[in-house]
Length: 177
Image (cartoon, rainbow, N blue to C red; front, side, top):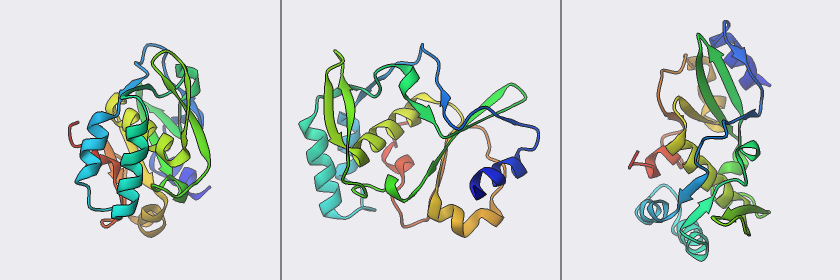
């Protein structure tokens, strides 16, 4: 994969731990969707129809959710370790766009009851959770990478998102962090 090769080029002294690095058990799996709804209400980089559908779906589910059943069930696409520092990187392909995938997925209530939601919504909630809970977390969108991979540089410490200017950005709806 071109993306993994680029990471290896930028981080030659790092260890690529696993494509699905599993997070520590002490991370809180709960996410409150209220702030996500609030931010989406005024977000302009998605169509009114997509925004309304997403808010409608979020409004149907409990405010507080377990993003995953346990920490063994959530992963990060690429985890690099270099000089005892971890970098968590999500590579978002086309299907991560809001409303891009009609397939359903599972998320959990606080008391571990399963809830069926659209896959795009599960991805959005998990990305919002990752943004809030992981240090050194980066999201790189496929279309940005296709256009800018030759300009891509090492990622600084902190939270970052690389997306085309006019496209949806999780970092923009996660303003509170």
